[in-house]
Image 1: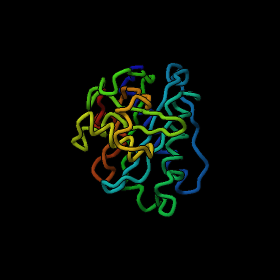
Image 2 (image 1 turned 90 degrees about the horizontal axis):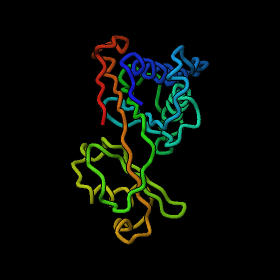
Image 3 (image 1 turned 120 degrees about the vertical axis):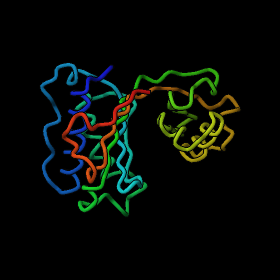
Image 4 (image 1 turned 180 degrees about the vertical axis):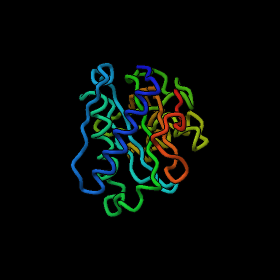
Length: 203
């Protein structure tokens, strides 16, 4: 789906309020809106949280098994409190003023016969071999400066726990997807409630 600026802002505010409630031990806000299109939307989403430029949590689902606003709130809470990489160092309330939230609203997964049939910066990848899986969002490749081969190798090794070249042997299923990425600015720089300050782009 193509989100309007107002819908993007709504989803960001849901994520922000859900993160704040989870970290501060408050009751979660309502995870529905008055926007019928949003409340009827079923698509996957990832929520990424950074504080002072450092990753503090990233959790998501590829399948929209709840309405999009509800899933955004759920994944925001999970990113803030359940990312296993930060089990001993969860996001703290004193980091909220400096944290930055990014949403990646996903297209359906598309299996590709040729593992290299994806475009860096446009597509994310999801790979599967037995019960081992791994994924990278579209923005990861350009940020790391990887080629398609490097992105596949890193995904196999770092995410799926496979040999780095496992994608070459035909035993790994590879899927591609796109994401509409919605990013808020650092709160120390700009208020998040001003709609024209949000950086929004579509991959």
